[in-house]
Length: 322
Ligand SMILES: [Zn+2]
Image 1 (cartoon, rainbow, N blue to C red):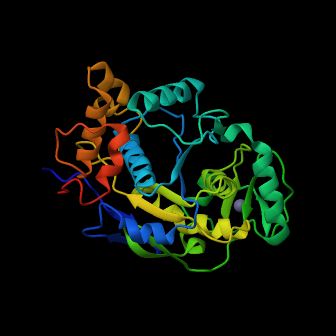
Image 2 (cartoon, rainbow, N blue to C red):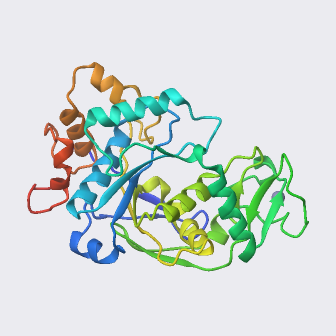
Image 3 (cartoon, helix red, strand yellow):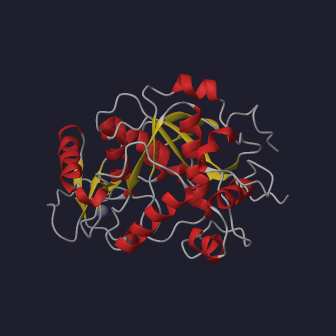
């Protein structure tokens, strides 16, 4: 079988790319259970900026599979902080597709945990941050910054918070160490990677980094299970969480991604990998889950898997892995 897994990830240094060879495909459950602070709560947190595709299904397999294997619970969060790209029809479609697949959140869907419904939560978190950290207005555009790292040029300017200006928080120079449940011990230096973190952008929108860190804290998420494409964000989220008053960082698990035939990460428009497209071709939910699981190598191709049975993929002795 062609290996579609890619494990090239950025680590602590800018422009430094490390290739992690032979990562685990499944976490060691006993170790993971011992590492996570009880109660084990994880989340499935899609953004309604497009339809669900096989990449989301892989994430759902890991989220529900590991939560079920460890008697944890799953919450569903709609990450719609990006008010420009999110659309209500995508939200309705992702809830419908998820129900069709058979993945049920343990905290129900009423009320739906939707970021755009709770701006005051982020306001409040920002106020808390002001008390203990240097929070400042920044008028730089993406073009002014010209890369991933912000050099802090507005840090000492004393600009007033105003329309058209972003808000940043100064980061300390601490090296963040964390133990990924699949990748092992990792080190990241957020001040070098990204510089002072953007909390709210120039259009007045809360950023992904800020909203997700606040939500993981207030919703008591103790295990974050997500794709390896988000690995470079982890150190800065652990640091920000600590600045927001979080005592125990969540445990992180970054799983492999599936790629299209050109080796690119699946996008929203990935035709033949969309859950809706596969449904319209007559595939059943267990067949779609089986395809996603096979694409990352959790099972051999052609094995349908019911959503209620995904925990078996992580209980190593039950299903033979590749
Ligand atoms: Zn600036």
